[in-house]
Amino acid sequence: MSKSTYQFPEGFLWGGATAANQLEGAYLEGGKGMNLADVMPGGKVRLKVIGEPGFDFKIDNEKYVYPNHDGIDFYHRFKEDIALFAEMGFKTYRMSIAWSRIFPKGDELEANEEGLAFYDRVFDELKKYNIEPVVTISHYEIPLHLITEYGGWRNREVIGFFERYATTLFNRYKNKVKYWLTFNEINGATHMPILGLGFSPETEETKLQDSFQGLHHQFVASALAVKAGHEIIPGSQIGCMLIYAPTYSYDCNPENVLHALQEERLFNNYCGDVQVRGAYPAFAKRFFKENGINLEIKEGDLEIIKEGTVDFISFSYYMSRTDKKNKTPEEIGQGNLIGGVKNPFLSASDWGWEIDPTGLRIALNQLYDRYQVPLFIVENGLGAYDKVEEDGSINDDYRIDYLRSHIDAMGEAIEDGVNLMGYTPWGCIDLVSASTGEMSKRYGFIYVDKHDDGSGTLNRSKKKSFFWYKNVIATNGQEL
Image (cartoon, rainbow, N blue to C red; front, side, top):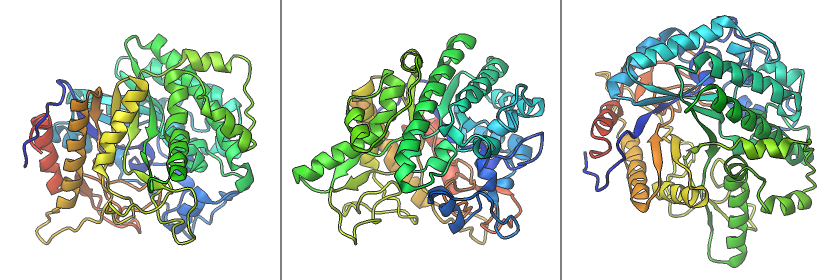
């Protein structure tokens, strides 16, 4: 343990984060319908589903493992898991609701009572331990019917389905949930439209047009949800959720500096400007013109967006990005998950994600300087291979080192003047990886005995980081 030199605010929301599709399992129980995650196999084929234009969802179900079908069985074991969160001292738990548990096909007029009742039980269990839920309304699990029959968020009709779904949640849980997020990592849609928007572009040429049109529909849907949430739940706080990755120029060549600026504005600022400021940013006009993007904006859309701005910004931070205008063939594909080139000053995780705690301090300052609204880090963590020793212990000092350095960066940003609400490291309990479907890519403080082939007992055990994070929370970040 080390002593910090800064003070986290009183009431700081320490906790952890998960997503329904990655841990609940029980994919056809309780009246739930099929969703996007249910047809995404594990391994390399999953990457094709995410990234290949025109990918057909008719996959041979007998040939592949579908890890999201079972997850880690949180559906049946949530009491056990929440008790472990409480033992760590969680003040908050960022979770999501599976849309297809509430509306199995997505376009029904009436909600599924069994699904609603399940989350009642989860919220009641959290309340028992005074853990505040932070609920993501849509987290990479759009109902499959809305993809196959409507084409996902390309179709404007989905706005109405989402509004009905969100309003149903607000009415049902108005006495149980104060903090809400509309769409998970909304700006990632242009990189991974299948996850964020529920469609695979037919060609690379149509990807930008379809993605930005789908985003416009989500902006309208989010704004309608914010308006409804504020009306139904007085005092509620509703945020957007971004992937944030500061973009560094590879060098001081002005061409590369300009390129990095343009990439950062498009990736980091475009969605935030719309959802926080309530209007499309000025730089979008030229980008649309140069890329042949013509948004269909209906009368009243811009007014809805203006009136439905969010109360705070939540975001995930895993890495920074380094880029240059003209990359050599050898440099292409050498950067992070979201592109760019390799940064020679940074080390990387087992999955090639560069580790940059200073980038988190930069991100917090950039966001607060631009928007002047409270910030909430709702994902951050290290995916790594964990080894279970003969005595059952898991000595994940590498995870502790990663988290300590990032919490240090948070403290420095708070000293810089940033208004930071809370911190919920990703995958506080081991779960299925969104990008690869692996269990071996572990983030948690709690180890779950499940493996990439689906085998395992699902037994839970505490890693070394469990006890470390428990002490961090107990001292409000004073002991790291």
